[in-house]
Image (cartoon, rainbow, N blue to C red; front, side, top):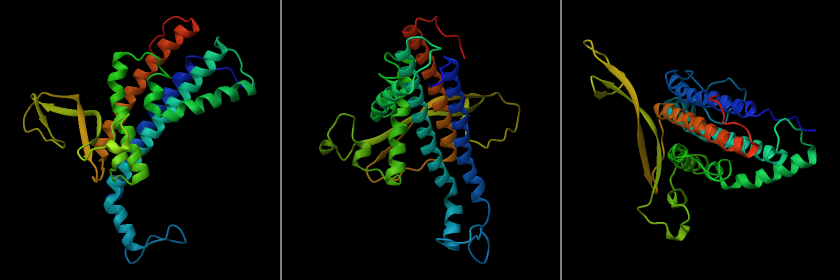
Length: 273
């Protein structure tokens, strides 16, 4: 027998895990900056491992490119982590829908059937999983934030499968055949970016005040676009903003998920986690 799900506690544990993982991934990008400031071993390659494929020149190149390289890894991991989070929530929803009542146990054969169903459903990708499967009727707030995942998912795929070099498949609009892709189509990604305002004016960090000032931080939508042939590069600072954006999306998704599932299970509306 599969252990009974504790709803909504198990779903909220998934959210806690997601938020911690996104913060970890964002820290990986920062580690790239730290690595770039560590000079390579002089006189030869690093001998931390007994056999090397490469040498001193590669060690130099890795340190030089570490901020961009680890930022790419960070973004790939963040979007993949979010995809796993959505999958786990969908699996929980399908199990609870099958059991009809929280606290019941599911036997192995039935769980295998549900698991197979979710594996098939997840092939559409995290964007469609969120909008229509995990949440049948997304709120306006969730639909607005889903734009972040849509673009970042496409960026992740390009970084992971094409080394960040944008190709036709990356700029192809959804539902349009690849043969109809145009030269001026672009890969677009949107996320929230923090702005630091001093006396009402945006400033760039680091910033040193020469007098008493009024400062605050707010967020704005930030748009990046790449055309065919462009190289996608993200910075450690971009990764911090992307982690914040996906964290806010995860929290909104949790709210919509509980709202709908409580109706399905005949439970009262959820309290804030």
